[in-house]
Length: 77
Image (cartoon, rainbow, N blue to C red):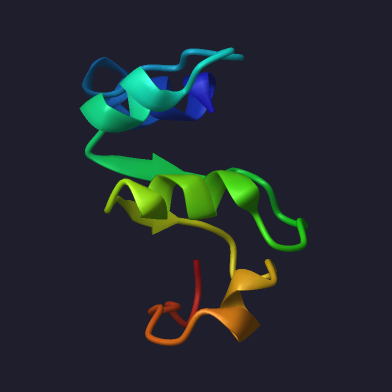
């Protein structure tokens, strides 16, 4: 992800923190949440971000697609 962000010229616009023991400060500060997982059941991390009122970006392959109404999924991501 870091390399892709660098290639796209957007690396300075985000922060790659790695593992955080307490995500609360990061979620409070963030503009949106990006889940890079392609296959996960019900993503607790996405649900946690949503509990902070954050927009989340996640793969359509996750269980969120079938369980959370009103989420928009682009034709091709």
